[in-house]
Amino acid sequence: MKRLAIVAVMIAAVILQSTICSFVCWKGLKPDLVTVIVILTGLIHGLVPGCVMGIAGGFILDYFTGRLLGAGALSKMAIGALSGWIAPKIFGDHLLVPPTSVLVGTWLEQTIYLLLVNAFGRGLPVIRSLWTIVLPVGLLNVIFVFPIYYTLLALERIRSQGGTREDG
Image 1: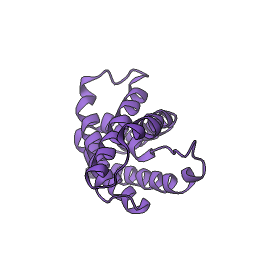
Image 2 (image 1 turned 180 degrees about the horizontal axis):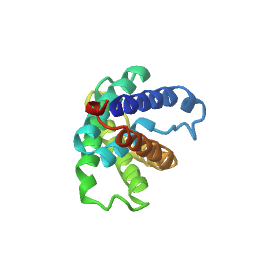
Image 3 (image 1 turned 135 degrees about the vertical axis):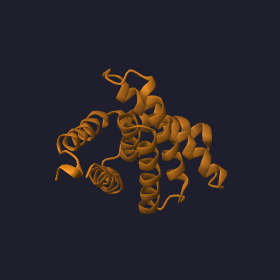
Image 4 (image 1 turned 90 degrees about the vertical axis):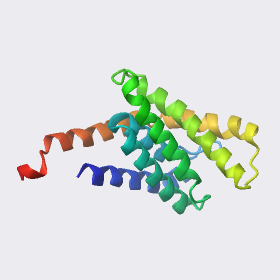
């Protein structure tokens, strides 16, 4: 049930990101809701769920947006794994952990993606893209941290209150 709910949230984020967010962009930039979900899933659920959500969300987003297939999946998988790995090492109940993690994680994910697409011949100007895309998208993603974070926590609470399969 929890997995199905998280997948539904991911699909909703991909649909929102590829449709509605395209109309409400700021200076040509739009939030990367999938990256926010991947980072927060890693923080809440750990390394493996963060990694799985990263690769799944990245492939879905690459497919729907027509980007270089696999580059988004690899970059999001890496950042999902990193956020899941680092989660036990940081003070998770502090209010600044989710937004700071999303800010830094988005910067890392976008940089990895930029380097991957350049490795496959897209020829984007790296330094200019860092200033005009990577840094602003990280700041834009921070706006969506708390609504997504509390949605994921609510899904976790619903699962924990629902019992196990053996209970019926």
